[in-house]
Length: 426
Image: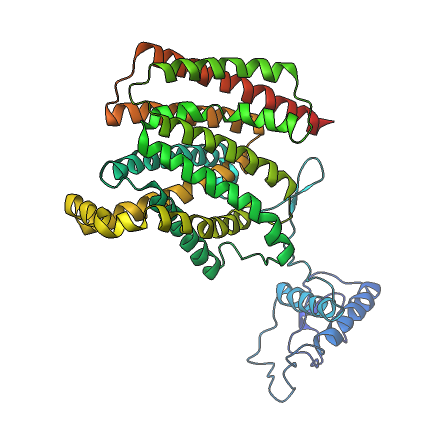
């Protein structure tokens, strides 16, 4: 923008030559010739920048000095800012000064303005929710599962239903992409098959025990599982088990023995099947260590469930198939009705899958020591609630033996978890 014939005494009354720009800067203060020259060069450069914008200045024949009042200083500065911003954008730089920068903390790290989610602000509440749902689903599964056995005592078929509902759940989850299905090849299939076989055997034998004896007694016997794990680790895998772990297992063996001797619902079918379940789950742990893979735990558990389902179907058809066709289904429907029978089977299958999945998710959120304590408390909750719900009468010796066994499991879990944390810290 140019300025001509400016009087030093009365600049407002000085004749002004119309500019090629539709705005003119008029200063009411005294201006020296030097400042006029500098101002002219500065405004001229801004005018050339404005010419490169998407819009053009108004032509002379449109501007009328009579009806066009000169704009103020703010308009000139705004036009200059637009020109500068346009040049920066053409050069590929970030807009200036309209740039959104992250605030810097006192330690120099960037602090995002994005608000934190509820889980990020209160992680302990989310972890507590996982523990609650793990306990809740486990207790509900054990209680509802035992109620089904009271009018439908076919544990092989019920075990198939547990896995079938879980497999359908996994297939639906894969279909919607939650989670995304991980591909599996022949080599991984061969590695997971022994794990799935042990999982199927342990699951079926657990259900046979649940159907034969009280839920509290089955869980008391299953408290011996750490003893079998330690024995297999030392004598099968060749790991050296510290003396402190063996000593912590002594109360478990003593407590289970005391509880078994005076258990009112004791029978050899329930006892032996629970022991076989302990051995099967022990070997499942051994094969799981050998089958370590980069696949996430959710997909691994889904594939194991699918393979285990095919393992469980043949014995269910052979052992219980004829009885089910003759009178098994008819008797159950006659007692509770078709709708309740079908809904009970579906719910126990859903609860079985969900509580196992939540146990894995909880382990991923907490330290092994915390998970070990939580697992022991879960068994206490299941035993306690099953006694209350079903009104099982237990002798004083059975109660003391169960408490001793649980205390031994707690000591074993704490010592083992602490050893694993020390090994990781090295």
